[in-house]
Length: 56
Length: 190
Image (tube, rainbow over all chains, first blue to last red; front, side):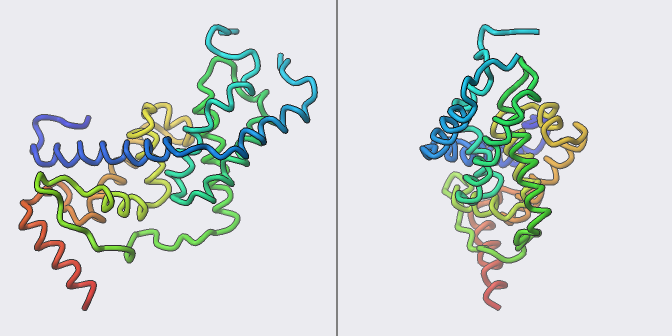
């Protein structure tokens, strides 16, 4: 669908750049350290569940 | 029914490994870290307490993303959060001249991306950047595949408009781009 060679090469170039930039937006966010509070939260949820871990 | 090789017996044990993409999706969607973190927090609790609704062997990340985006939109409906600038009318139009090779400056791209509606950011991130298929995105968004495709096209078009690239024409020579940028700032100043 994207990068069709029949289309204007400039248009394809911009498309590609936009794709790259979109990936970068996501990957930049992915590189951020996940705050500890989420791991703590999971540990708390697990502790609260007591036994935990035999869902079917 | 079981496919235990790659998955933990309890999918809840896998949640921790999905935190980075979940948070990246939240940040992409909200463009606001504290709002994103609240969403991640809610999503974790919902996922934990509703884990029996997760179908073993299906994509846990997609399931988590679905919870997160549903939480996001239902919150928005409730709070009618500052849908400040749905069409991206104002906000930084100070676009800089592209690099010599005509590359869009990343800072400008980010600014344009921030001005998109969350629906547009969502579809572009799901399909384009985080690597889901249109079919998977359709499942997460609760819409038809055709809707995902047309929304993607509209979102791209909107990005072009915000960045001042005429749809299709784009990547003007540096000079033409410069003139366009100056014209834009001129209008802004007037």
